[in-house]
Amino acid sequence: MGKKVKKAIKKILDKTEIDDKIMENIDENRGLYNKILCYTKCYGGYLLAVGAGCTFGVSIWWGLGLLAATAGWAYWATHCDNRCKLK
Image (cartoon, rainbow, N blue to C red; front, side, top):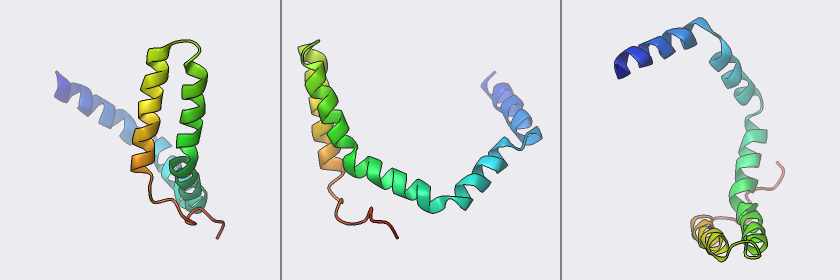
């Protein structure tokens, strides 16, 4: 049953040009998308930390979970120096 569904989805996507238009838009604005991804990776942990602090008032367990996610994000995003500058 899974193969039939995949074939049907592939057939529908082949008939449309949505994926081509999306890829053209990404190719035209590659620098903007890269900058958004860079800023998200570099500074998204701060937003997550603020969310964790606000969540502690509601539920200690959700707050601890978000705080752990913030620590994971900080460990993952240690590359941030001046790479997100405007070019």
